[in-house]
Image 1: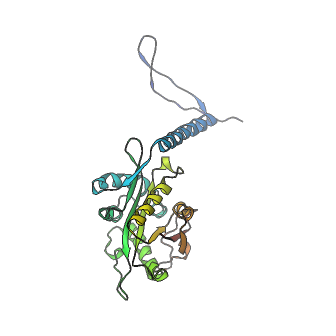
Image 2: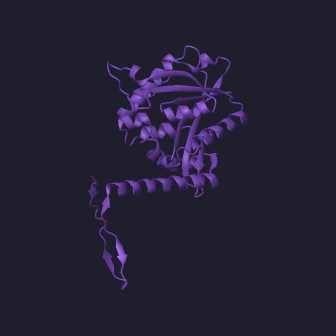
Image 3: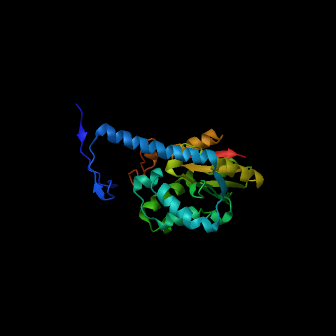
Length: 263
């Protein structure tokens, strides 16, 4: 049995007298699915062609911050698994958290042939904590209730896992804070290029250790392909606060992983 979907599409067409008229078109459901897939393939093919032709990876500067925030609002604030689960919405605190490391000049952006940002890797240097020092708490001062849940999870992980206990020979590391890619360019190696460029920077500046906390399975996979080791993991189901699981992202993002790589 064929299901027909009557879709009225009104758009101006010119007849032979130059006058506008409206045309009504009827499509079957398979027609609509085929059109949707065709449009999706066109977008992906265009993105791949642009990546093949030119994809520049350069430093993120302080002048880039407004554009970076606009980019993150579309491709990180909405897409990151924990943000999606919480339906985070507008979050000034996350904007500040994401961009406060940019002045350190160790973050990178990927741009297409038009100069548009299609991916970012925002990084900051972290140092071995002073023995017995009380770790700083950002969660308690966070006014955004949903983002505070994420910060609380990060601080919980810091209480049960210390990177420098595992690598006591190092005094500092580069912390990969946020890795995000335009959805039209995913699967084209942009995240890998950003990570590789970051590793080059670390070699140039004698930073011996790369640390990335991954809440996305896809980000963890990028790290694995580039030789990172999984040094810690926490299934979201095992993270319980007051008898409840405050963060349960959708499959396949079932755990938060800490990935590390000696440089």
